[in-house]
Length: 438
Image (tube, rainbow, N blue to C red; front, side, top):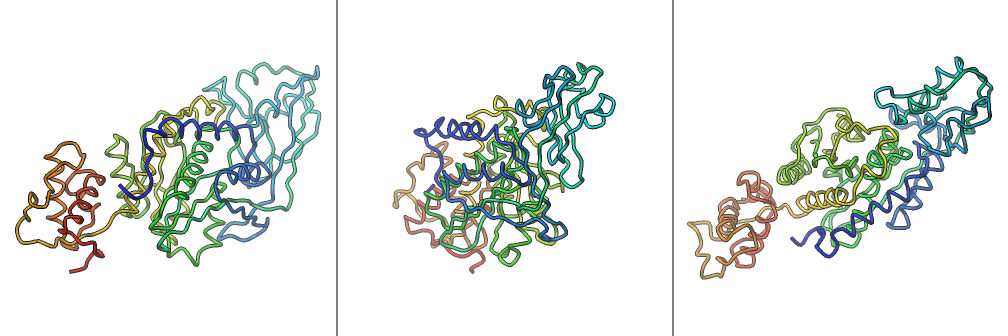
């Protein structure tokens, strides 16, 4: 296909390693919904793709929400009576509840316990917890660490700040031949979590680089945003241009070994839904119906916008035990799974780019293909399948069906039908038209 560039054998492996390398580089940074960790992350991404950073001041009204104060953290620890740091932010940035207020106190263990979060079901893991919109503070630690704490006075320090600042997000806009655009987003608000954060960032960064180097019929807008408040902020500030959005994808949790999973938009039949279902089904993956739970697809599919934005994952949050814990580390995501997810994303976008309707210019009876040299193979599964693809395209090209319509009805792959249509067009038997043209 001549649309969005697919990965070739020459790049196989290299691209996956590059994505995993970016995830490794960004892993130590402490990110949240605001703050310098987000800025540092976006600056690193901007070294690879054309990324514009936006700052939205704290207190800005965005739909039914308000941009919160900015949170930054420098250090945090719990020191035992003998002075040892038994919980240390420098060892893992998951040790502090996100958005914790500053604290500096001497406390007994009984006083400290209400502020400690652990997961008894996974005693070796540090859980990830946040308190974005309610002033609070706390520490997260492994259950085994918690059980080792004895009596005495503990030195409790959270060196953080909550003050007026701004929310930061990154936007990469790639104009095409048409203003109609595809929206692609991922969240950038989690600290050291590899699958539920960095896999999406790595994939979207690589995807932007590929799109930027490709001739595009459609325009593409890629957003690197903090979850929920970031998408709500972008929607509030861009409502006047949303009519250009044909649909889109939220990308998250795309680096683990789970099967490719496409979650439909609220509409269920948007062009991205149909393309996502086609690709996921043919790759042995799963297709899920929309539910108002998950990532930022909830905001883009709220009834006042209904943008036809689906979600591409491997394992949704409820499907992998490591979710929101220190076990979601760099060993959980693998270059081969990142690359497979990127390839699937490219295949979905290729369908959105290339789907179009044709008109059979010789519609009375089957045209004689042999005299036009159209019986030779197209490089598909077999010569018979190639010929069947041509016959399906000819039969359905009456102005009422696109190639994706034909793929869904025939069970053949979109790629094969596109090749058949190109051959038939070159042979003078097809003309491209707008769908619905008599």
